[in-house]
Image 1 (cartoon, helix red, strand yellow):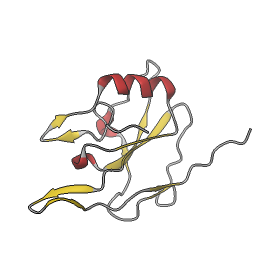
Image 2 (cartoon, one colour; image 1 turned 90 degrees about the horizontal axis):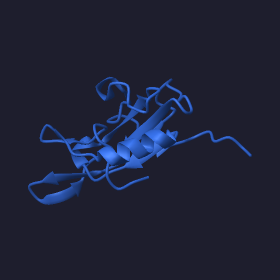
Image 3 (tube, one colour; image 1 turned 90 degrees about the vertical axis):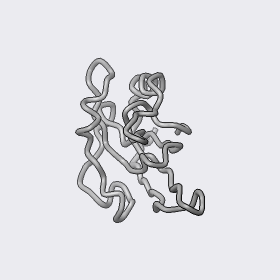
Length: 119
């Protein structure tokens, strides 16, 4: 979990990618099952990204989008299991939106259920 998003993943505001390239490299080394962040409120949503062998993201624009305006619960709203070490569920969990009255809650929160291996 980080405050800001990695570069090119749910980080767009005003048609610009505002995420951090260094964070993208760090997350690509670890390849966690889920990476949760916020900060870029316009990027609210969730995608499953697939990692290339060199650690880059396989075309972030083609990431599997989750239906985030309906039921924000993974994995129960879809049939897309995450492939450990090959994919990461990226969640921009920002819930605020800038309105005429200032920052107000707008988006519904996410519920993520991960089936973690036992040791």
